[in-house]
Image 1 (cartoon, protein in one colour):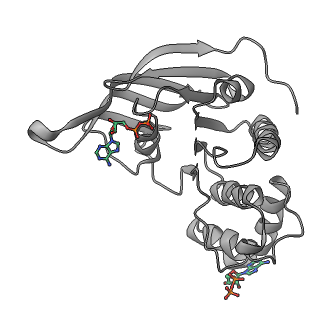
Image 2: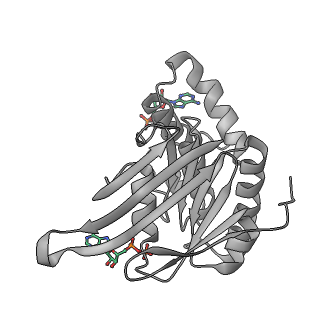
Length: 227
Ligand code: ADP
Ligand code: ADP
């Protein structure tokens, strides 16, 4: 079933003669359970495309619909950025709890939900640690747990592993792949790395620069393994 639909979407920053075309025009349909990886050179509109899908940005023309409605940030989509953007002075549980509260999970259910989320991202037992006491890779795991707090239909990831060392990156790639395989969650993932794209994607979209259009849309033929 269709999860995400972009119809005639075009986006530019600024107005008039100073307007910068960033994305489109493009059309895109993503089905539930697809793991779409968007690759393309710097400036090709990858981040803008994610911001449009997240609902952080409204397209200059065209429409973005998630299950037939405009996306509501933090409710329908979970977003993970290159930097984890956590509250550094709070505990891991405190960060996840804030996301659960924001997602409308009743207070009485939050502790159990937090335990589940930490288990999902491989951080069981670390809830009481302060964010500044855990590694960069662990912080990114907290960011993923937070993005999953609202049980979003769609997970958006913008170069989430770019700042991590190679070994940590590999482990997190495996875990994200397992996680989305298991839950059948849709995902749109932006990366510079073709290796990462091939490892994670069920579908790869290549954007060209000037201005961000879809140059190729490739179904990855082999089913993903590793569950
Ligand atoms: P990518 O993520 O592929 O590097 P971006 O979506 O960041 O591409 O950028 C696409 C185009 O939009 C680029 O030309 C960039 O300079 C421009 N752009 C991105 N963000 C802004 C902004 N906030 N204001 C003005 N121009 C922007
Ligand atoms: P502080 O920085 O004030 O010590 P935390 O950042 O640890 O607080 O926690 C912030 C919020 O998260 C508080 O409302 C706290 O009650 C809640 N919280 C902390 N740990 C848990 C947990 N294990 N389960 C559910 N909620 C928690």
